[in-house]
Length: 492
Ligand code: ADP
Ligand code: MG
Image (cartoon, rainbow, N blue to C red; front, side):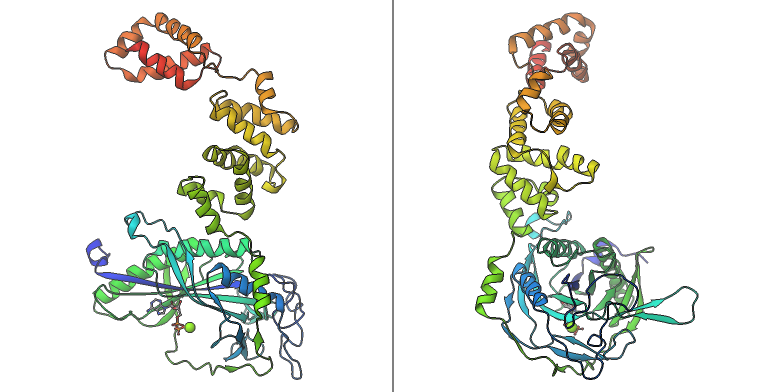
């Protein structure tokens, strides 16, 4: 059975995300072992991480700073007095038999992250513009079980045990898969801009569990939720939610109920399958961690962290939209990394042609960097050269094609040169002189009398052929705008 549009629209989809982010501190959250991805199994472990008797954890201050930065970026309130809790359960990847986490006093509470979801089916005014954050807490990661193909036993690698994590928990406030996609993209940008995590979902430094339920539109209570795991990309989180949306409605429509369970996503089929029942009863026996003293974040420290916050992607997006008038597509491309965003923002200090500057960064400059495999921070031309180049095009003195295909490569070969001089040397200035262009136009019209008649009888597509002829005779230097105007006038 497939779901038709009318049936789907009787229900509201509800999504809440739990996002785990590994913090890239030098050492682990409670011990001095290296906090590093990979390595020979069981080499980055110490008796503290393994909780041998007589050892005591010691909190890594850098980790707390990173969590606070993320909290500030998510517009959260920062908890200044807090403690850690033990979450007790048995699993072979958990060396202590408990996980140190924060249950009652998460380090950040009630925030919001701005989003711009791409929901073409919705009117712009109906699209949500932010996702509410319930809280962010600190905790340690577990080790990793390795199930080798064809082997009867599994192996355990504790290198990851004790890796610092923040868990970002959203409110169940999203109603479209695109919103989950948008907030995850923003969270990944935030952790990268803050330099606290590389946000790599394939390698698992960022992981997302999606909680999904559906309810009839008029129902006041939320439906029973399913938790979906094992999505290794943001796109796959969206696909998993799309699948659950349909699966749950179909179940209900067939008179069955959705069970609370954990499901795993299969990227090949785009479907989810049951993994285990979720305990309805909370049996983790949380209690305050007795081996760590309560933690206090002073006003001074908080102010210091606040003062050192970088510009955030959504702040730069707002600035680029409001001050530079960029369309949405450009905002996405130009704020994708902090380096590109800062480069573009600086470029705009040198030129008044902000949209043209965006095109230069997204086009020729990006291609050059891709070809060379270098970062924009290494880009060899100065902003003075770039703004001069932009102005040559914007003032119609040189065509964009000539500027990007001739002047730009020439400058990259001789980085000290001036764009205007190069344009002169290469003879690239456009013919904007109306008189001489008019002469060319007259010539072309005189040379193709049959085509002129055909054009006047309605074959308007011939204009391109006339334009091509004018461009050819001007050796590519005719100002296309002016040539086009003169041609139309002459033909009509
Ligand atoms: P649990 O106690 O099962 O862990 P929580 O209330 O702590 O559930 O919420 C965990 C996550 O699930 C949060 O991201 C929250 O937004 C989301 N969530 C809670 N209830 C629902 C629901 N009915 N539908 C979808 N998501 C939900
Ligand atoms: Mg919970």
